[in-house]
Image (tube, rainbow, N blue to C red; front, top):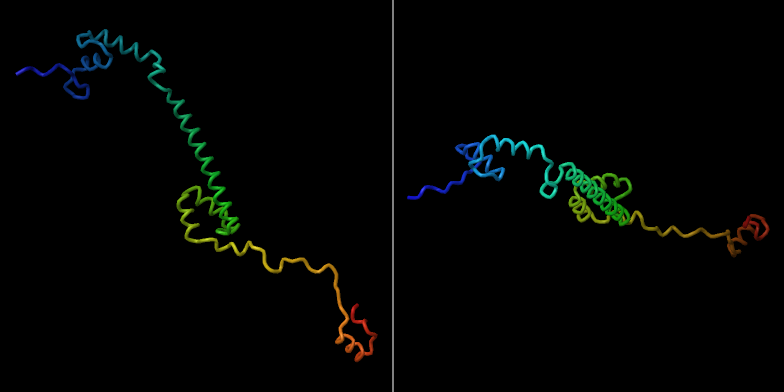
Length: 162
């Protein structure tokens, strides 16, 4: 039987520390510990290769900007949905703040609310039949009834117009 191939697994406890360091640093396994330590210190003190590593601060800033941008877009979309619901009579002006909070926190729940409630407030925003302008002047026509009333009261005909 052949002996197993000589490869070490740095995650196994029986692996020799010097051997594991040599493999991680890309050096031969026979490298003396002093050279391993020197190479390790050199790597620790050198700046990371920008082609291989991205600065953590840059990634955090990028993620923060992305989150802020998504929040702004989401709030704008929520604002538009609430305004449309208000115009179409799904909600009243008093419900606006609540609807905006619901839409920002859970847009699907807001959509479900609109779907289930319907535009129940739409008739409140429509013009009623009494929106016409009143007549510009009081126009009264003489009638036979008016003449009879004036005669009975002893008034001149047409005196009730005033």
